[in-house]
Image (cartoon, rainbow, N blue to C red; front, side):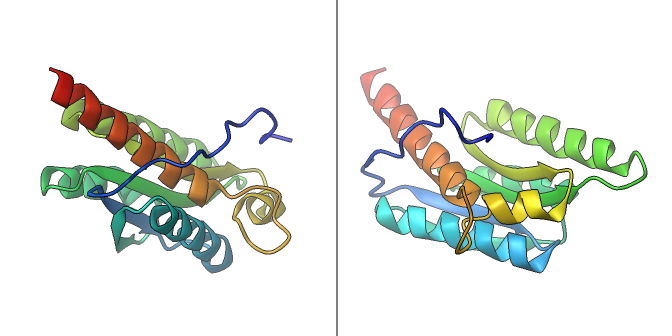
Length: 159
């Protein structure tokens, strides 16, 4: 299972951290599970979040960059890309991954990566944090973004 060896989501004090959850709308069931998991984790850690819907995963980088430049401390990018019979999967997966990496580096702010790149729908259902899912990738992405934002905040205080 891909989740083997994943770090525990320890309690981090996310008080004062504003998160933009950029949520792709492709594949309703899986996308809704990812979003719910991210929102639960934001609340658990004491951060606040605004949800910004986008059509799909290709749009995640530009909206994440704009949100971070507008003052959000972190972004959580959620999307679903399922392999099909054409190279479209590779293009969208690469664009989302490379774009979100560039956004984090260019803005100096964390981007939690909750983009599922899947061979089939069942893999997404297993990772979406739904009842019966084995993993909760939305919550994991939110935790990574908030935890990193807290770390960056403490480093900036030390500087």
